[in-house]
Image (tube, rainbow, N blue to C red; front, side):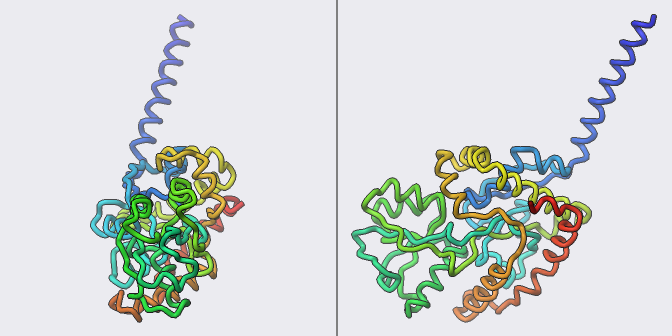
Length: 329
């Protein structure tokens, strides 16, 4: 009798645990997370794979995206709930009043961007880009870096022939000779240069011109439906970023799986990036410069004031920082 009672108690406890786990899973908020195939967004994918976002109450479905422009479109059309965007694509989104907001940084590091050139194109300095065909993803930080580089060299925006590309295919365009240069990012710069050997040279990195990485974006629709979970989403990202900072080798292996490259390539990329969630002064300066440039070139309908669009981010970051300061270690 005692044995039966004990077994019954164990069975009841097991059912309770199963029920609790099931209820916990049901209570998780569903999120369609648009993640670009770039190492700069490693914290997004690593955090998902390591269960960090689940820990904060999210049931994440990853949707692969190619560029910041595609991320803007996917967020604006309701195809995804969260994503990331660089300095230029986010500024363009603000100017066009797209329905999503910035809530944090996902990484920083402008030197993850650069200009890789074919040696036979005889490009030794930025001024030599005049008349050249350059693969560049429209509406991205590398595009903005290229714009500023031309301006510093005394060249107008139309001094080069821009060939629209995405980060994944521009390397092949350079290898095939259909372009003379590519304004890209890591790991694609390193991958392409390795494949081309002595046929390609890195002209320069863009860290002095534009902020790398970008912003954690949440659609207004999702935020309105889940107002109490926004801070949790940011905290989950911060913990994911901290995990990448503290476990770079394992994180590189996880991200390499997503990018379908060797882990060593992602490890090389990590040295150019900082998974710091705070919006620093250089980022704000980059946003101001970008907003002015885009408006002057009639690439946006109005000149936006980035400060106005960072109010929500500053508020949420302050809340998360007060509650989870250790995530900045």
